[in-house]
Length: 178
Image (tube, rainbow, N blue to C red; front, side, top):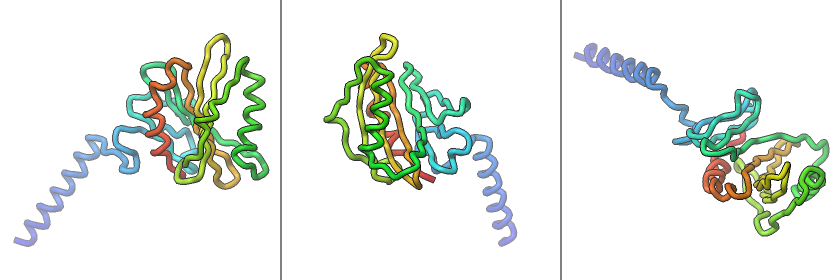
């Protein structure tokens, strides 16, 4: 009787594993309703998750994705400043570059706040600017880890920016450092 029970349990376990493989069991680390869009070897450093409906850009070498309804997008980039910088100093260096690109750079100081990214202290900046006649709005979150600044950037046209803010918040909340 014991042998039959053990064989039955083994067969049930094998059947369950086979069904999971056929059904494409999800990695339990990926939040429900999301997909990982971390490019290449960056998965050794962090994991970027976006809604399953967004279109991944990881195959292009960019850790990011765009909304399936428009060209609004999120991406993570890394910077190696070579020296320890405060978020304000790093932002000021970025801002100096943005002023060269955008004809009318405007920072929304009320939305520049402390936050977290992947459990690390971070700083959020919101700004807008016109490029080639189109006004874009950005939300950038800077976090520092191991002498590297990680930047999560959300980009949208000014009129579409608010459309995805709730989704971008879920992306920020799901971000994980490896």
